Image (cartoon, rainbow, N blue to C red; front, side, top):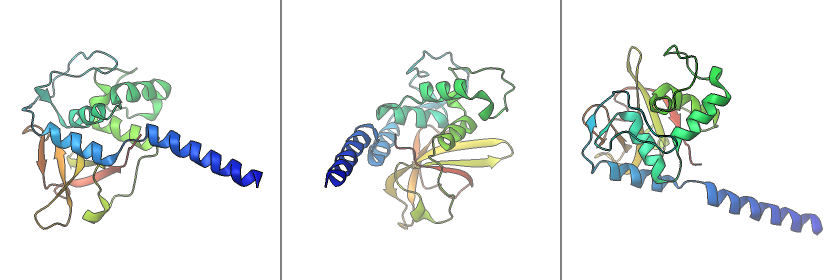
Length: 194
């Protein structure tokens, strides 16, 4: 009896803790959709960004800024989280840019770094060719050709044929919602809710 009560108490404490720290995927979707109302010019320039919780000018951005801004709205500072994880395990991250150390102004704004971070946090899920496998709040990464990568968020709006959810991303025309899930080669699929 005591063991059962202890188990129930522990389960309730775990659920309470989890519910206070977990992010609702529908909230992620909602905030991503809100970004599409802002006029943003695609601008891949380097910006010196305050840390933590820093952002580039609100009228500028690239695909990763959609992810960063959406997660900020749900209380997750990916600038800080990625920076701290890279400091703790720099060798686990891609060596694409020839850096010798972290750069808190740009590290979180690079798709391969976000992919590595999400994978290290256990958020990677299988890539599929089925639209039903991509749920609101999921993050999808693509290879656009060569070494060009891209990232977007799955939202809770459906394609005209109802077979897949739409994507909020910035591929050059600002923060937009489009039916583009399978337009490019998917190289990453993540469900990061905490």
